[in-house]
Image (cartoon, rainbow, N blue to C red):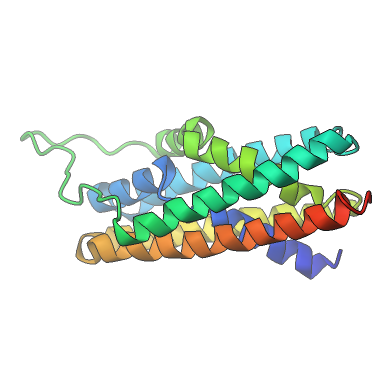
Length: 222
């Protein structure tokens, strides 16, 4: 696999996770509105390492079971179905978005709370990513089939794939922290609709790729 293509695939793979309005994104946005850019970014930065943890487990774990025909059938059929369901979920949320409490403020009870240290924000982002049911479901549904395409690739291609994955998460964290700290309240529901719609498009893209890969590798016995 071409190294540049590996980077792009890893980048898009990560974006399909970032676009979901789950626990991590809500935490990043809420913190940006309440405590500003730095705290919001550190939560996103920590979540990047949580995502990397799941990706590493996927890369190691799936390589040992991909040779089993039944496993391949389950990965591609179930993976395609779940990705389509997630695409539907995101499309639905683009019409009826989940609203975030933009007016929430820490210290609104009359006493100001001290800002959290950067390490605490980082660890909070890491823990949120590792415990998020949305992220767990996403990796169960899509990590196996997509990572299967890396099976047999060189170490350099896999390293570049991981670099693309991490880069997308980092840039997403920077963008979300900046936007939420500057204009989160003003964007409101429109902002959530855009995220949900883009997420739906990416989930459909990966569902098609997973299905076509199934035709090539499962039915073709490659």
